[in-house]
Image (cartoon, rainbow, N blue to C red; front, side, top):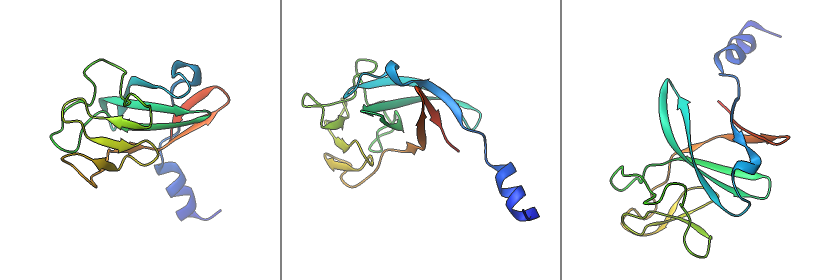
Amino acid sequence: MNDAGDARRAARPAPRALCRLDDIADGGSAALEAEIAGQCESLIAVRRARRVFVYRNTCPHQDLPLDFTPGQFLNAERTHILCSNHGALFRIEDGVCVWGPCLDARLRPLATRVTGETVFVVG
């Protein structure tokens, strides 16, 4: 391995455990907190089988939390993430706003992976 490859690998933070997979109901959402870049962040996690999509809990329209009731982030049909403040709807898979005052804006994602029964933040 060359020095540049070693330096890039050393600069990447190690994956950090975020939660257990069963902390998020399949098809549901959960509110989580994690230290990101040295700050405690409020997060949204949405589970689809063994895939977990994680975003910062901030609407791009006015930087307000998305949930009125902690951990409840989905619309009634559970097809989109809902901003409870303005009614904006975001695709679960990529966080893009498809309806509402912030159309085409995005939620801020965190890269994750599921290993065994644990959800990790990667990077």
